[in-house]
Structure formats: structure tokens, C-alpha cells
Length: 414
Ligand SMILES: [Zn+2]
Image 1: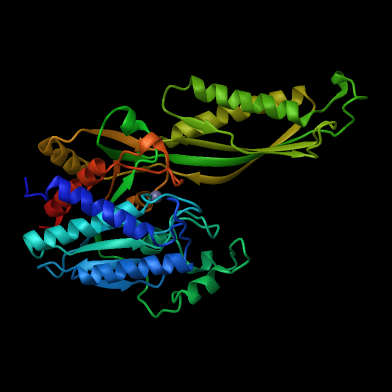
Image 2: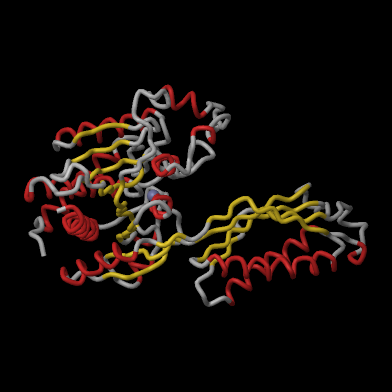
């Protein structure tokens, strides 16, 4: 076991830095909004860059806007241990999502450098430019650029809600003009991300740390039922082709089947659009969303196939028809088992309670996880609340996460 900082001092340091970073894009009521390349985003990245320099790290951007702070290793040819998270937020998000992973990495590297000097392998802290997809219709722009799965041509022509083209916003922030190095990296040994859980499993089970084994795969569909509009008073029930009735039965089937599944599969219908959406007119067309997630792609596939098989029968019974449009199909991603085992060992030695779990939400780690060994470590979220000014993790839990990161980095790089 390595020498660790005092819990009380560490708690105070993490909390102070959470407040410091939340002041960039903060609304003064606990909410934070930092959208890719906007003024608050730029100010936050610049503040982190100054902090990195203050800590004696070699700070630099890449051409996508990712920010790195490097501490060189004795072995100049060794691959890089990368740790951090994303700097962007949702609109009116909390102080911890993304920010915590960056802050924890800064504190951990500062501590290790002060008490243990230079590592053998280089360590880099990364503040990833974008993960949430809250300004432009693209997600994981930061980790995707680094791993090469997101390419420049993918952002051409996309615009934000104010019609600002992606590339215009990027240039205005000083990126995308090759003033900075190309984002794609080929020198990474692994990626470690510390993040808030954004769910309430750890809190309910009274565990301090979550070691993520898999990030779930997810499929998303838009399902449209076509029927026939008609008068609500003069059309007898037996003559109707009611798209609403079919949709209601389909939704019931989906949620009921998901409830019956005991494998941890989750299915959600969260949005519904009705045409003509008038109280005294039979619905002609109903489109609803479907979001299905599990850590096993076969389970997702079997669930969808089974339900969609029933759909046709139900639609035919009511003289309606259905189109299922799949617009997202992301495979589950396994986190690296030896990094997870290393985390588990440290937690056992330190006497910190933990749980091995899957993540139902997407994270940058899933992008890195298909590219290099990756670890995703959670700290509890109060009430499971996230993407909200109510997002909160207590200082005790925050500092336990940092201690784990310190020990992980020490094991990997020293
Ligand atoms: Zn996040």
C-alpha cells in the first residue's frame, strides 16, 4: 500500500476544485452549462490548462479541443497512461458529471508527482472536449477523435439549435485549423475514468465504489403506427383503424415483456407523437420511441425480435400497419478485466466497500474500451440524480475515488 493523502485534506481539496470548475458556466443556483466550443467551455478549458501548468504538467490541446496535461516518465518510449473525463455538460447539468473525473486526475497526478517524483511511464490528464451531444447532434466527439472513430467529415453540415455550423463554432474556438496536433493517438497504454454513477445502485447498497465490468449496449427505434383518422363521434368502434389503440397495445407489450425479463434488460418508451393530436379525432399516425439496453447484445436482439414478431399480429387485428426504424445500435463494451482486478485489489487492501456492476449509461470509457484497455470507476450519486443542478456526491465518497485513482496510477506508472 502506498502513502495516501489525509482524507480530510483530500475531501476539502476535491470539493474546492468542484466548486472552482463549476464556476465556469455556472448559473449561480447549482446548475452548470458548458456546451462544446461555447464561451463557458472555452473559459473552463483555459482554466484547466492554467491549472495544469501551475502543477508543472506539460499542457497542450489537440485539434479537436481535447486538453492534455502530461507528466513525462523516465522511460521516454513507454506508452501513456491516460486518465480524465469530459468537460462539456448538458444544458442545466450538475457540477460533478465529467468534471469530477478531470479534477480527480489533476489531484492524483499532483500528489504522485509531489510524493513520488517522476513516474516510469508517462501519465496524461485529459479534459475531453465533448461527450454529451448537448450542442450538436454528435456524441463522444472528444474520445472519438482520439481513438479515430469520429472523423472530421462526420461534423460537416451539422448545426446547433441556433443554426451555427459545427465547423464555424470549432474555428471560432481556435480548433479545426491544424494549429494544434491531430487528435488521433497511437501511444496509449490504457484509459482510466472516474465518474459519478448517475444511478442509485451504490447508494442503495451502501457501497463506496462501483467497478464497471460492462457498459451496456443500446438500441433505439422510432416506431410508427399507421391507421386512419376519422370522427370520434360518428365512427362506430368496429369500423375504426385506430393508430392510438395499436400503439397503446404495443407499448404495453414492450414494457410488460421487459418487466418479465429478469436478466437486467431495460426498455423505455419515453416519447410519443400523435397525428393529428386532436381530442375528438381518431389518431391517424402515432410514432413512439423505444430504447432497449443490456450488457449482452444477444439479449437485446432476442427481446426486439420477439416483440416485433407480436407487433405485426396486433397491428393486423386493428387494421393498422407498423414501421420500425432503428437509428441506434451500439454494442456493449467490456472494460478491461485486469484493470478492474487491480482496482478491486486496491479497494480490498484499503478496506473500501465496492460493487462490480454494469453501467446503463454511455461514457467515454466505452469509446476507449474498443481501442485500448479501459477502466470505469463510479462513486455514488445522491438519489441517483444527474444531469440536474441537484446532482451531488458527498466529500467522503469523492475523496475515496481519488485515493483509488492515486493507487491505480501509482501501480500502473511507477
Ligand atoms: Zn459524464
